[in-house]
Each structure stands twice: as C-alpha cells, then as structure tokens.
Length: 126
Image 1 (cartoon, rainbow, N blue to C red):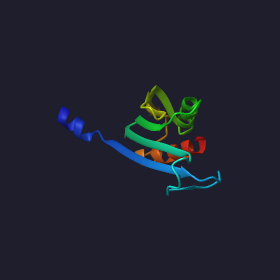
Image 2 (tube, helix red, strand yellow; image 1 turned 90 degrees about the vertical axis):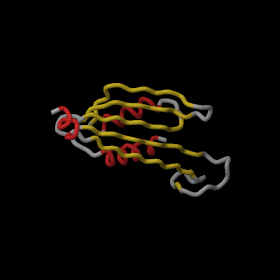
Image 3 (tube, rainbow, N blue to C red; image 1 turned 45 degrees about the vertical axis):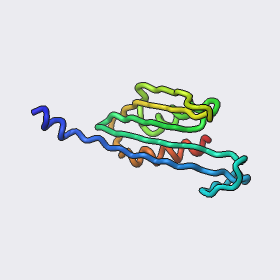
Image 4 (spheres, rainbow, N blue to C red; image 1 turned 135 degrees about the horizontal axis):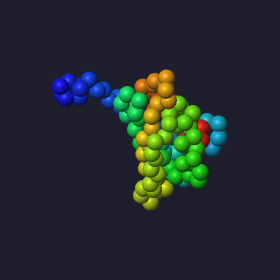
C-alpha cells in the first residue's frame, strides 16, 4: 500500500544555468567573453515541483535589496513563500538562496516553466 502511494507521487525538476556577459551598451547582452574587467552576471536556478509544493534554489551575485526583489517576483508567479534562506557563499559575492513555496489555489505550472519565468524576471532586476 505504501509502495503504491510512493510510486504515484511525482516530483518534477528543472535546472537552468546561464552566465551572461554584459557589453558596454546596457541594452544588449551576449554569451561571448570580451575582457576580464567587464561586469559578469551569474545566475543559476533550480526548481522542483511536487503537487502544489515548490522548492527553488538560486545562486546569483549578491546585490543590495535583491532578497526583497526575488521574493516579490516569486509572489508574482502565483507562489506563496513558506520559508526562505539567503546565505552568502565564497569570496565572490555569491548568494545561495533556497525558497520553499506553494502554488496558489487554481494555479499549476511545470518546473521548467517556473525556472524560465523566474530567470527572465530576475535578469531584468540584475
């Protein structure tokens, strides 16, 4: 009986890793390297969805006020934040962010769509 229940539960995962190099022109971005002194953006997002529960892991550059902005963007995606953790990592101003959330009533999304939408929203903030 317990084995049948466990087999029926499905957990969906999606991960995206993108490293962007900004050019001197603020309106454009590219994937190629220019020189090492230019401004590098680092963003890594992983999401797992199980029924209405969502686990989000984000690694990004630490920026002032970014925690509040991230939580606001997550709520715009019809998720209610249950618990969050923001930890600095390493000497390169990297943040390790873990968020546990639940999908709002009547809302359903895949982990892949969630990662894509969250990545697009966060890149606009960076």
